Amino acid sequence: MSRLPSDVHGHVLPRQISKAYPNLGPLFYVDTWPFGPPILALTSAGCANQVTVAHSLPKFSMMRRYMKPMTGGMDLTTLEGRVWKTWRAVFNPGFSSTHLMTMIPQMLKDVITFCEILEQRAASRQVFFLDPLTINLNLDIIGRLALYVV
Image (cartoon, rainbow, N blue to C red; front, side, top):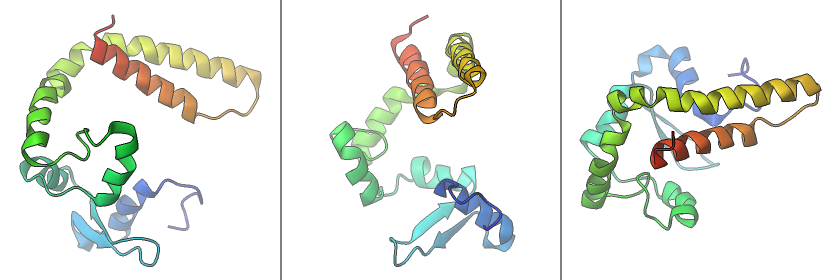
């Protein structure tokens, strides 16, 4: 792990562990004591599908506490059981690969604008944060897709 930047996001950790210890398999626990509870790391799409779709396991309580102020507890990330399945079925068609492929031309409009903004910022030779720009790009794309803005 020392080969990674000191400020690397924690989400890369499971993949780095699985690369360093390939015998662990596609899922393993990471003990984060005394900083937090153990984490079940999933490094394969098949395992992720098993615990999120095929068998919707209970959601992590800290995720619920994190999301509640933003969503009031009504979000696909933290909903459970029958309520989750109902809302997941409502949104499934919008996330199908076939549907998303039809939306690429609309997404490209926002990506082109994003690239133009990056070029302008780079030309200024000033240091700038990517976070607000990438957040805006994501919101623009999601808004365009959700509202069917062409």
